[in-house]
Image (cartoon, rainbow, N blue to C red):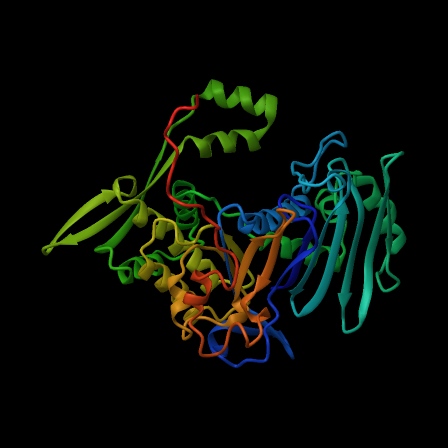
Length: 432
């Protein structure tokens, strides 16, 4: 689980901004929102981020995904560069480094990971664990002139010399140490644990078609249960009574298989076969006592979206440790269905998983029986046009009381995170 995630000089973010899952002392909705992975450490399993368009909501998710990418998918060539922009509305920040800091729990152990980089290389990188006291796992610096990495391991790490010598070979100047570990044939408990944790940080498709593809693959591999998906769809009042997966494979001729196997290897052949396979979800509706089957492609956008969400719910509820970022959670969903999705997760999700979602759905803020203040976040632009991230729990009682209607406070602009719109009139007269 994530404890804190901080980012600096990335996209619309200039100064360091922190998304924290640390729960305050309130016991409000504690049974539904709070998980205690380590005794005394209370973490929220949900963060909803509100804000005007272009205020930086999505940037928070992009920053988290960027960090996941550089730790799980290392470059193979030292000439490759990172695909991101620093904060550009300033004379200095385009030439300054970008920084990330992530504090998280894996298998009951607390870790702190920080990394500093520019577009060409990783500059500094450190990993600490708390077991129980803070100790260095590794520290890394890069000699930018020589384009070389130097790694040192903490005193409690076994076989430090072997790890140093071998891991430095695989850690290019534009690879994180965790990325280099992915390429190396090395064994280390801490690096393995942290690498596995980053793989639980999901990279979700933004559109419903790709989410639907995710469902079909999970159903095909039996990673999720058909009965679970069907139960979620039934409860969503979509008139769906059954679900089937239709798989049709297009055979590749022997000459094609032989050519690609010889030139690129069997893995590429299997990838081609996979791409030639058509997977289609068939949904059965009950209308006036009769059953009708439709391809999901003929269903509404909302049904397609919720089919994808049903698989996400399955992963959040039935599996342990997934961290799921979703941009614009309410997209194509009726507000009641949006609430139903969140409540289904909150009521049933007992494992150490977390949902981070951006949203414009304000109706939930009308009912304090649905949310905790420390799970509601806002993004706003300051005078430098830079993103500021803050929680509803940060406001004192002069702005937000326990009895306040947060919906009205947010709508009126007291909490920030809303657009400052001009009037509705447009000058249609031609310029002389």
